[in-house]
Length: 211
Length: 98
Image (tube, rainbow over all chains, first blue to last red; front, side):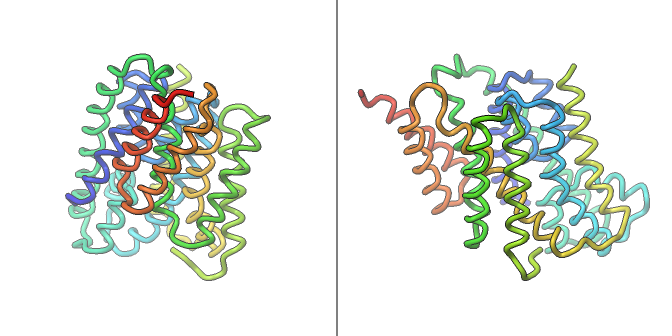
């Protein structure tokens, strides 16, 4: 789990600094980490808030980003024996990383799954608290150009996901469509529209099954 | 107030997705499995471009700094390093007169 923490800590710090930069309070920044606990959705939500997006656009984008957890649950539910109550607890703390670890080298029991999940939950929330206080002390973000952290952070998250040519194509199309839509549409609609349509394009262009 | 409605909605759709998979056991069609693979790629890319140029007439140096960050992210896959290089390049280029 320790190598995973090394990835979670800067991500959590970056999220919290961005959240404070957008105008969220320390409590609101931390509430998203405690209640939603989904890194990419939290960072996207904060980015959308900064663009003046409405709540509905943010919730729909969150759904688009997090509906992949259905897959993890389906897969995990088959290999780990769980009682109905354990399913609810395991679901609350489920993440990409905890799923990966549980499936790859897990003991495939509820205590192991929960341990992997909670260790990530604890580190993510500690990093959020640290970043939330750090973000609050950055003076006059506009003049310093701190808003530039947003596109840079999303680029740094995006690039490692690009493994195949079709991945790059989908990213380029999504970026171009979002830029065009942003000339006319406010808030989070360009992100939602470009995100959904480019992902559909990717699915239509690929044949072989890819998990 | 609107923050907490949004937060509640995000909680509902996220926890709902996590719980649905663990409690229902169904099979998703292959097309939607592939769609899900592309969602984070498309959403992240769509979040980059509208905020890349900025509103202060610094589009040129922002694109250049973003290119530097992309290069570092591609070579190292280190999130923190790529962000640091991108911001560092941006602040350095800002100091150049003209």
